[in-house]
Image (tube, rainbow, N blue to C red; front, side, top):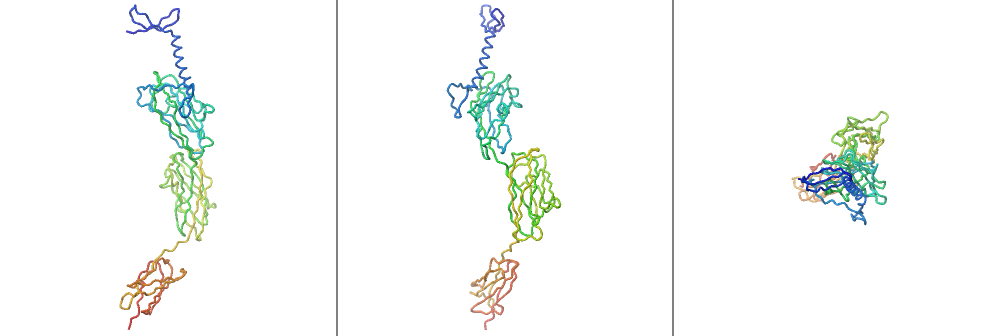
Length: 447
């Protein structure tokens, strides 16, 4: 049976191992030697990380040492991942969480995070690294971006005691680089990943992510045509805002009060079946300030999606002439995420008013003999006040004629002529309000 005992003598304290039999010679290590070995292991881990610098093609530079990550522990498919995020410009500093599917037994880890320095910059103390509130809380992260090697964030986290659980092991705060524009994308990838438990290195598979920047969203008023008189809806729209957390907004819609009048309850404002359906919506036009529709919406639920933010109902004003138009513009616009202003762009609109266009109608009938037979090749002519010139058609074998595309509400004169027949009433005056297809002509009897 193997036993251990501590022996104190002139040579110092020793840890010895051996059998109980007196004939066995104990094998002893001095505590000084143990401390030296432990220090060497710790120093080797830290210095190895410091030297473990690679280029972006994962080719190790001369004189560097790579930590091995080949040991497979009892962990089931250990996995470390970077997220895929979408942020709006101008972006405030934001957190990129590094997560694991299991951290059981881990005491230390190190890796590099590669990013595009023309799009992202680490932000804050310790190059943005923090373990606060993570599975690695209480451990000291050491992060660095070497001069001339921007785009590679070197991370080392170590401490006493093993971690456990699933979730975030490190948060890194980034800021959009000044050269980032809408549509800029930075990949996020891992390099030289090493995790350690009390026994040594553990193999962790890794998954990268990316950060995409979008420009400010756009608040849009439409450009539409409407007839006079009419009452109609004007949709105020936004593009994708799901990532912004907006839960309140206010703005003024400017319009021409000589042409348009807000119509209906709440001065024509409605959030029903819109993105703002979960918010309280208040609208008002102050007497003496007609032409300024003031809109306020607020609530606790963030609006999400893209499409109609709210609907405005207007009626045409009295005495409006065809061709008149009113611009729809915005003033004093504010969007908020929990009282923090959110940036935006504006797109104005226009309402143009026209007199209703008369509907097209048809005029037709038959040219008949006195005994009811159709007259072939009779010429029928129609003329009217709105026509630039008369129209003429020739009847077929059964005496039918037809004019299409005439305007409802007009008065027309229809005249028939035939080489073989005479007509005591060759002309008719017709006021068309709808299709008229029985305007018949009957020839005089033949003797």
